[in-house]
Image (cartoon, rainbow, N blue to C red; front, side, top):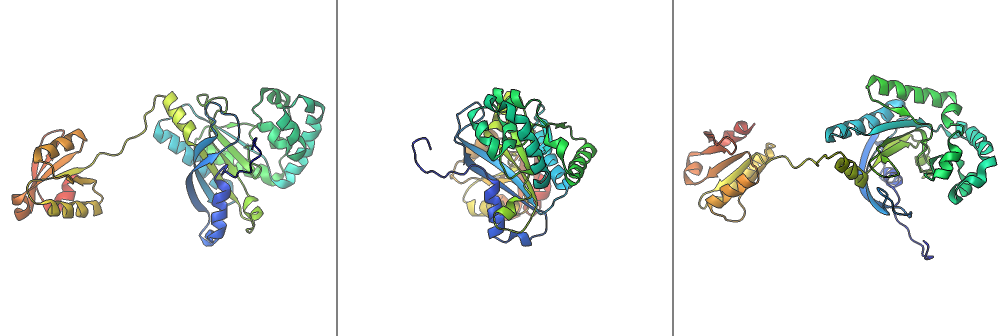
Length: 346
């Protein structure tokens, strides 16, 4: 760091997932192997709106398939996720940065084009010119964006295989009626990407704009010591997603309501615990009193927490194996057999 200390902090999740895939023999699973993660990561850059030094990511990876169908599957999964949240103002941008074969030829063309303007680039991009000029296209500095605005695009220099792959992705997205824009400037910020790269962007998350991004990494597993294995994934910035939800005045979905509260009248807590366990095994969301409260206090608790039904369990109910089931919103009561209680709650 700037203080001269040697520090190692996790910058992203894909490399760790791939390492786990290799170390745990997941290559023996049926392909594609679908994995997800949720983690904290770090970046050593200036803090900006939507871009923090410590941040949270949720990501998915699909390993073992090289075809464009799995690319489209991950993209459509994200679109479905955004639709379920109610987000309306995100835009999908896609590109292809080719394979090592066609990229090598393109990088030479790009360097020849950039060379006369290298002095106009920022210090980081001048350093990237020899090491990885493709990353210059991803720079957010205005001066660099002006230089690269008319730069040749990798998309115009794809080999036939990469072109067919990208055309196949576009056809599937069209079939799924997923709206997208082909953005020739997208290269993503990590060097392991190949072929498909994509981003979901919004104007609400600061100068960066990207809520979620991903791409294909067909050479990463081999680079980490495994056999040649294709893969693709995405990472979603949790803080940026929350900013987008707030900007669109969308609240986070709450927990589903509890189906039933079993109120205990008298010394029948054990019977209530047993009934609670039986109903939970049938997929019913159930709570019962754990604080030895009065029946009145239990009923007040159930109403305050928006539970759908209340069943009072007392001596008569235990002996007859029946109970009065009250719907808290309509106040309607019905008598039910305790062994058929789950049916009454559906």
